[in-house]
Structures are given as structure tokens and as C-alpha cells.
Length: 303
Image 1: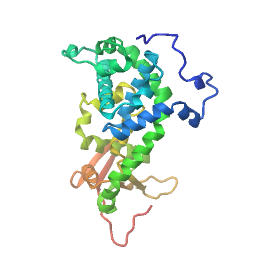
Image 2: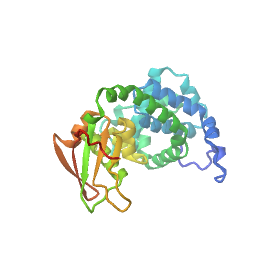
Image 3: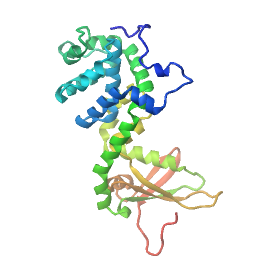
Image 4: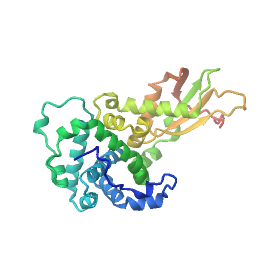
């Protein structure tokens, strides 16, 4: 295997001329086999879709390195348990690509299923560790030029289906007022809607999933290692959107918004934000107070 080879044939001739970018339809058609395998992985295996994007980048990398351009197509015919083994071994390779030091038991761990797939006994964890910088650069290129674009609509459809099945009943069962936070802002320190939503989305995600803050979190390692465009976006994809609606006070053009009503998707998220009764936060150096929204009779909230 030679990750530095300059003679590797172009696998995407449509992109040779940068001024003639292919349409999404042509792009997806060219990568139809990759898309079929990715769709099967997220449908049949219990892995995060974004994590599987990185796995697909790894499989495409192997296909190019061993110059077996039928590799992905062959994987489509494999049984699901064997596919799962390949995914697990790919994730194990990520660990060795990322790590700056060898694991004590690295000699007792193999990637035999991957070796059989590419028919290359020289494919070892030690190889990925020693060539981690070159391999990581190649994987990043594949992610940027192929995977994000080719799989974007597949991810979106998966997210939509998951949200419909997972959240609809919970949202319907809990009245909106019971999962609404009332926010007040300091005069002279205006905040934009996106600042508020991004802050509380991030806060709730970390508060309800404290393991994400650990430096040994596999999700965070994989995401940050491959420079996914936004770790917060990754978390939102993994756990779902937090804020359902943000209703700012109606004010004149030169006036500052002093309060807002933020509807979150779950009551547990509202309780996390208000911390029992009332909580104070600092968003980009500006103070914000949060409490449970209490609807007042005959005093509708002004939009």
C-alpha cells in the first residue's frame, strides 16, 4: 500500500475541470454504489450516521489504495454480520491513526476481516499508526470531495425518519407551555437569536450527556480528528435539535429585545435550563436569566 503514490488514476473524472462542477444528480449517479452501501449501513447497523460517513471514507480510501475499484460493490453482497465486523475494524483503525502512541496490546489485535477483504496481509494496525498523518490527510480529502456531498441527502432522510419516530409522541404528550423557558436580557447588551439558540443547544446537550465532555469520548475523538465542520452540528445530528421555537419580544427598529420565550422539545430540557426555578447564564459576555414560563391569563405573549 502506498498513500503517497502520484500515479493513482482519477476516480472522479467529472471533477477534473474545476470550473465544470457536476450537478448533484450526476455526482450521486457516479457514486451510486457508495450511496447504496452507506444507506445499507445506516439502515441495518446501530451506528451513528456521521460515524458511518467516516467509515465509508475509510472504505473508499482502501478501494483506491489497493486499486480494486470493485471493492465497495463486493461489500454490498456481504452478510450483515460480516459488514459489522468490517465497520468495527475500520473504527479500530481510526484509533490507531489518531493515537500518537502505540497501545500496549496492539500486537494482540488484528484486522483480519479487512485483510481478507483487500487480500493484503500487509494491512495492519501498525501500518495505520506509522502512516497516520498521510492517511488522515487522504481521508480528509475523501470526506470533503466525496462523502459529505454524496451522503448528505441520505443523512437528512435518516434524520427526518428518526425524528418522526422518536420525538413526535413525546412533543404531543407534553403541552408546549410545560416545556417553555422565559428568558430576560440585560439592557444595553443585545443578543441575536442564533447566539441564544446555539448556546442553549450546546448547554443542554452537554448537561444531559456528560460523557461527551470526556477527552476519551470516541464520538468527540472521531469528529474532531477528521475536522468535521462543527462539533455542535455533529451533536445536533446525533441527539436532535433542542430548540423547537424561539419567540423574541416585538420591538421597534432601534429598540433592544429584553425578553423572549424559548420552546424546547422536551420537558427535561426545560428543567435542565431553569435548574429548578431560575438560572443565570453568560452568553458571549452578556447576562441572561432563565425561568420556567408561566402563562398569564388575558396577557398573551407578544410576538
